[in-house]
Each structure stands twice: as structure tokens, then as C-alpha cells.
Image (cartoon, rainbow, N blue to C red):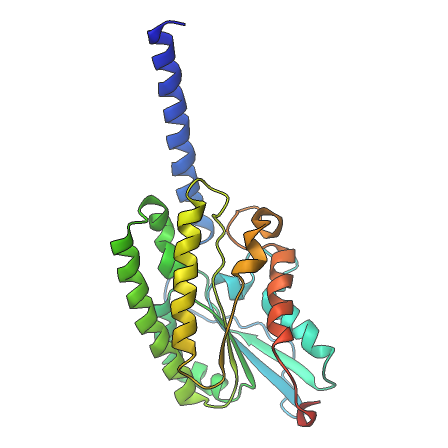
Amino acid sequence: MSKRIIGMIVAICAATTLLWAIGLIVTIQDQFFYKASSVKQEQKPTTLSMEKSGSLSIIALGDSLTRGTGDETGKGYVGYVVDELKKKTSQHVQFTNLAIKGQRSAQLIGQLKQKEVQRQLKEADIILMTIGGNDLFRGGEALRDLSTTQIEKEKEKFAQQLRTIFQLVRTVNNEAPVFYIALYNPFNDLDNGKETSAVVRSWNYVASEVAADYQFIICVPTYDLFELQVNDYLYTDKFHPNKEGYKRIGERVASLITLTKGEK
């Protein structure tokens, strides 16, 4: 085979790889990390029940993971938590989902300062939350540059904002347990899977350290649920969980919730 033909083959392979990478980043931006238009956008809460007496109230906050994007049933992990809790109590279990797709930690801080959100949080018995994935991957930019310096800067900023989030929640409601659902790595089967996994573990460690400074804020691990068979639990966009992925998260969260006799 001539050097000219070999050169042409190498060039074609390189171009194909480049197009695949560009397509991946565009997909991430369009389907997983697209920007939330505003924390002041119209809220469309999902509510199971509005009965106030003898009920267990759950408020869910965060990003597209808490919205349940990728679950064809529309339940998301919050729905599976509710299913499990209904097995544990005769009370009415109601939940309001205030999560916003594409939301980052700075935007969640703004949302938590809204009077109506604070009013609902004040009445919550349980608070569920996902936040940080969009801060970390930054609309797909992190896949282009996993440099330690940039990642560390973003991680430090996120830790400060997460602390502010927990402080705001605790100022409004200092009794309800908060279940912060930590990050998993949807990219661990790619060529740089080891690097992205190390970054995700590092961010989860920081989040758990921040949570440890507050009473009744529990950092729920999900990394292990996806690590070995990640594609089995991802939606077709390869970023959000699918039905089974959300179910695994929901069951883990529910397993950490123990209802007292007064709540049954």
C-alpha cells in the first residue's frame, strides 16, 4: 500500500473522529445541559396531592435529573421515592417538583430566594435535591478540557455555592431532612472515562464534606449505581438516566428515609 493511500486513510479516520466528537458535544448541549432561561420562569410544579391534613409533604429542587428527564414514564427518581414511601405509611404523600432543566447552582440560589419557593419549603417534611452536574460539565466544555486547574476552580466555586444553598434551605426550614443526590458519571465508557470518573468522585467528596456541616443533610451516593453497567441505565441521549436508572436512585433515597410512628 502506497504512502499516499495510507495518508488518505489516516486523514479520513481523523475527520470521522472529529465529527463524532463535535456531534457528542452538540448533543450534550441540546439535550442535557441546555441553559435554563431564568430562575424567574413560570414554575410548573408536579403535585400528587394537595391535602394538608395528615399528609407527608415532599419538595424537590434542582435540575433536569430531579425533573425526571429521560424517564419515559415521567416519574423520575422523585416518583419512585414517593412509590416506596407509600409502602411505609398510611398518610397521603404529596410532592411538588420545583426543579428546572439546565439549572446550575447559582440559579438555584436565586430560586431559593423567591418568597413562594420559601413558603413551600417551610411546609416541607422532606426535601430532595440534585444540583452540580451542569456546573461540572458546563454545557459539554468539560469534555473538551479536563485540565486540573480549570476543574479545581469550578469545584471550589461549586462548593461555595452549595454551602449557600444549604444555608438558605436551613434558614427557611431547619428540621426537614435534605437528601442531596450526588453525581454519577455518564461518560465512563468513553476514552477519557477514567479521567471523568476521577473528577466526578472528587466533586462528590467535596459535596459530602459540605453536607456534613449541616444537620440532617444527607449526601446520597449514586456513582456506584452506574459505574459498572452505565449504558444499561442511561436514556437514549446517553446522559440522563432511563426508567431503570431513576428507579435505582429512587429506591436508594427511599431506603434512607425512616418514618417515625407519628408519621405512619
